[in-house]
Amino acid sequence: MVEATIVCFDDSDFMRNGDFSPTRLEAQRDAVNFICGTKLQGHPESTVALMTMAGRREVLSALTTDIGKILTAVHNIQPSGNLDLYSGIMIAQLALKHRQSKNHRQRIIAFVGSPVTTDEKELVKLGKKLKKNNVAVDVVSFGEEDSNTNKLEAFINAVNKDDTCHLVTVPSGARVLSDALMSSQMFSGGNGDGGSGGGGGGGNDYPYGIDPNLDPEMALAIRVSLEEERSRQEAEAKRNAESGAAAPSTEESGSAAVVAATDGDDDMDAELRQAMNMSMGITAENPTMTEEEEIQRAIQLSAMEVDGAAGGASDNKADVG
Image 1 (tube, helix red, strand yellow):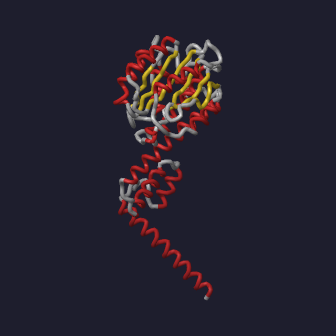
Image 2 (tube, helix red, strand yellow):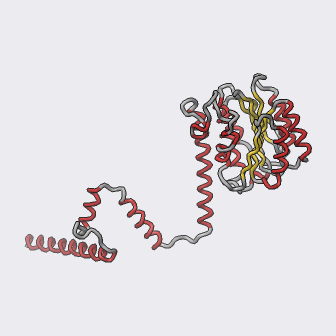
Image 3 (cartoon, rainbow, N blue to C red):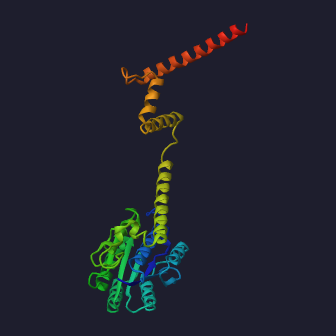
């Protein structure tokens, strides 16, 4: 299905919060990249646009088929001001009027990670107006779901037509925001919207919702973005773990190295393992040795090597004499 989609980005000061790793802003950037890439992959004539709903509330990228413009605009967004969901959606509706063809279905995807201050009655009124103008709306609620759920549910119920609108609620810190969207009704629903291409194929048949054979550059861009997000999360978790624990002692570090070396032995082939066992005096008759026996064996081998070296030196001296 050919769609003209505008993504409304919540760039309020609440995006500085770290309940989504590393921040709500970074998690939202990653999710927006995924959505735009999937929408463009769904049909070659589909277009996407991007705008902000806090601070200046402006359209950063008009409707386009160029994912590069969207990625650049998303990267440059910085948090400021307070969310104005009502004004943001009104501006988005006006932007959709400039779509290339009136045959393109209109869709607004709004990210809401800040408290919604608009009255519920006003949102319901807005929803009915959008429904009358055949504008579908998806809302991604994250971070402030406790205070926003009732208002957003009323809004979605007012705008919904033929089950084309969705409210996706992601609890704070539950998981990666983009992963939650992949499994949501926005992209896995039965109405054919989202990442579906043509009549039956769905974007979820491929990693990140993109067929790398059809558009390798887009698939690479989305994959890199998601991998960077996961790397940031792993680094953040590691820093948090290290800050709450004491530095390991030298003995612990040495033990860890021994364990790592032992684990690495599992990857050695049979011949190399047999050679190592023979060098330590472990034979088929004595396949296992305790730690103390191994230490005693190593001392004996070392002493034999020292005696052998000393004997060789004496023989050389006698020959010289």
